[in-house]
Length: 517
Image (cartoon, rainbow, N blue to C red):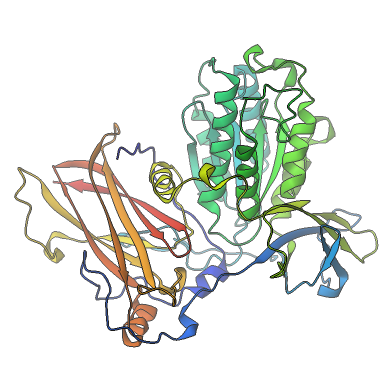
């Protein structure tokens, strides 16, 4: 398996995830590296399981006539309809930014995690995406300049923003989440915008959808509403009108999967078109529909807003950021007798005078498209290992062990040295299946890459078992701790570690540097 490596990053998480992680990430003992967590079959307390749920979360932004957050609304003020039928709002929470927000950066102790902030109480993530795939050089320059102009006005206190680019190769991480606008501006100014690329329209469409879905999959483990400000070129038409596009352009399932990924991750898209008149002719299609309609469909389906330059673009950006800082989270359960897969329309109403609502217009229930079109577990693992973004659906941390703490003898393979590291997985972050002979069912793997990058070493193995109550209590206190090893020649490497929870079909990744002397 060859996994290209690009960069390393970290992911922030809101406070309600941190409160769920009852285990310590720095305990003193761990299971053996390759030994499954086995014990005699016993009854495991129900409280240790994450049960399957059909809860649908619907973030709803409510603004008053002045454009400010409409605070203090009760559950009874909202009416939620799915396919025209009233739904019982079983979950309700008002999320709003506090007037004074502070964040304490943790002291680095040699541990790398996809949950680096223990006190991320008020994090409201904003993802800025610049399209370098479907744009001309002039459009790319315009997009970069507009993002710099917005960031130069400063960010709200404790407002994490990341910078990403869609490219003709892979998703590019320009800068991980930071609330320092000067660092983001500097990264944009240094960004290479690339030269004009000639690419078949089908390939460009597929890459666009795949990279947008990758963003959603990476951030799906962070609860709450996220904002994506999307500086877009001529993106594909979501409705895929067969009379307009060639029938073999891109399968409809690719569009559906991208939309489902964004919706499931609660990412609301705020797209704006970059200088339509400057489009590269290679991206134009016969009888092309208005790009405004295409971008508006992305916004409406995800609960965002179409930003238009003539209508004060900077104000639209500011509202996009604020929309994920102050909103209401509604939830309802899909009925047991109504589990047919497919798209379902959503309508949200609120009984408040002069209230303006922003919410997505639907969601996908189940998996869009036939099962043979869905990515396999192996595909998902490869994609996660290759991504420049750290996946956080399985929270985890990794600590490189000093040579003195290594449990194994030095490697005898040439001049290679054994590099050991401890992987810690909070028990509350995975799902145990009581119906299985092995309720604990994980897959753990890692690859080591040079800066070129070239793959130097790898491993992949299962971790499974039926832990007894005493072991579960230990896991709840210390986390599931796994000692892993890679044999490496002297040099500098990036190691990407992955854990897949097979019961929940969720993945976590952590990237960390290793310097072998």
